Image (cartoon, rainbow, N blue to C red):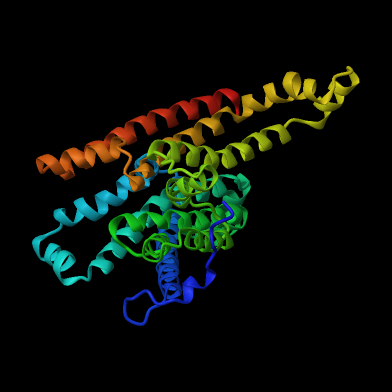
Amino acid sequence: MMNYNWDWGVFFKSTGVGSETYLDWFISGLGWTIAIAVVAWIIALILGSVLGVMRTVPSRLVSGIATVYVEIFRNVPLLVQLFIWYFLVPDLLPENLQEWYKQDLNPTTSAFLSVVVCLGLFTAARVCEQVRTGIEALPKGQESAARAMGFKLPQIYWNVLLPQAYRIIIPPLTSEFLNVFKNSSVASLIGLMELLAQTKQTAEFSANLFEAFTLATLIYFTLNMSLMLLVITWFYLAVPFVLRWITGEDTPIGAFASCVVAFMMFEAAYFCEIVRAGVQSISKGQMGAAQALGMNYSQMMRLIILPQAFRKMTPLLLQQSIILFQDTSLVYTVGLVDFLNASRSSGDIIGRANEFLIIAGLVYFTISFAASLLVKRLQKRFAV
């Protein structure tokens, strides 16, 4: 393991493509990542705010439309939605728009449009729920006072409710904005050379895998987020090299093992925070009473704190499990034949790729939606 010669100067070496260096590739990829995230966030914030307002208006029809939107876009994996927008939707456009999209536009531009629309609409469903929560957290007297002053419903939302709601939801909105950066990595799967794609290309061209992925990790870490695709790729490409240094023999790591370890470590961070929040939500008096009974710390956690905490955490744990189920579609990146990969391959073989892609989306939606209904029932039962 000590025989590896780190070469950080590789980023300043020529790629062999014109006068570009590997650092130029990284800068270009970072530029695309930021552009995708910013444009998608603008779409998500505007549309999500409108939908959030719609979910809180008195009209059942308007509220129902927003609810249907949220359930559809929240319960279908992002990768499935991306493939639908990139491969299926252009075929449904009028002929003149199809020609413009497929022939007149630069392939990079068409990929960029598909990604930002997909990511914007996907994130809008999450922003909608945050805006709705912020509005519903306000005292009912705010709306009553505004009506007493003669405000109409649009004025109540614009001048009274939304300004206060946004102040409440700034932290979760900030977190969601960082998630947009994370999710922008799926653009590499349709050929857009954002940061992750440029990282993989640099690793392949220069044979300096560790330097390339270390720099990418530092960039993403600087942006304050975790990247599932990067984690999977790290394990799939880097672990065999580490094992070869340790054992002196080639020890290939299968795609399945790489994905299992990557998902385990990535999701453990989220489950850790859920458990921590659940434990901290238990009143301090519970621990004080347990100490008064002579229990040690281990007994307190096992018999008093954790049983109550897990009751509160159950809906959140299940919700995160739904997200984990949807994220498994990302194993497509390392060639593992999961349900999405099998659906696409089957469709390509018989020339019915679009139909199989729609069926895959419906299956993911059905499972996720059914699970989300279970979570809602548990939330009502546990009064979380």
